[in-house]
Length: 139
Length: 180
Image 1 (cartoon, chains in turn cyan, orange):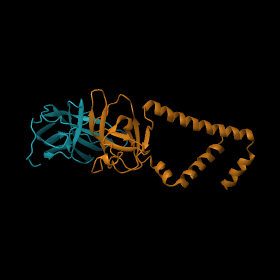
Image 2 (cartoon, one colour):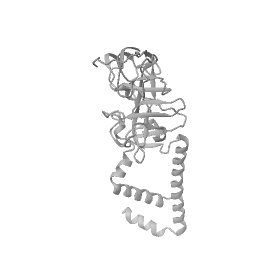
Image 3 (cartoon, chains in turn brown, orange):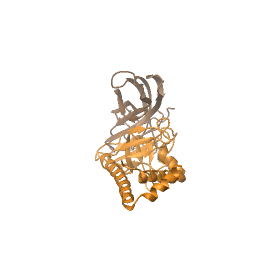
């Protein structure tokens, strides 16, 4: 699982807003190292989440992007230059200069019937946010 | 015809047999209630089984699907989890996904939810002026699911005549059932 990111923070009234672009290359496998879609997997809800700590909050998690994969879709992801789907607002100004923002890809397995597990993919990427705000970059 | 046989049966039953059947019926109802209460205790959720009422989590869940919940106090709320919550002052449980959490060192957490099938997050559903949900709003976390099975309760809600007919049939069956 590999992700490459480019990022900058933009000023908003009260809270930091982060902008992240990323690539994802991933094979979604099950616990037995086989491709995830089997007879009891109806779909996957994939999401990319950013996890970090700030002065205000010991733990923050923000979902930046998600995708629904149905049985029959290709379990190998090869996405480039993706922009986050949702606004990456912090609860405060904890993104500026934050060197320890970790991006992880996880998925919720939806069976035809049965348990709903939440799985975190192996491999994650750290995104260091810059110390200054960008005012002119267009997104 | 069988309707005439039923009435014949009723008239011929003496009082003792009738009391016996009523007790049988009461026992079945008590056992069902005990099982339900037991589930509430085991799962920690006030409502361990819920029926999905809307299409806001499609294509994962459809109206009529059944969800099994747990609500253990020490289970942390994390992004990506499917939670069932109630907005303060409203009775309807909503099943959506957690998309944002901000948790303080002491464990106080505030979080935002969104239905997979909705364009926007749930802030429009929360109370006036409320921007976040808290642990106290959570009824439970979705751990398992069965499709279609909950349709029965939706039909009973939308068509009360069907509910009364079903109860009448069940009541008649239990009262008239013979134990050999």
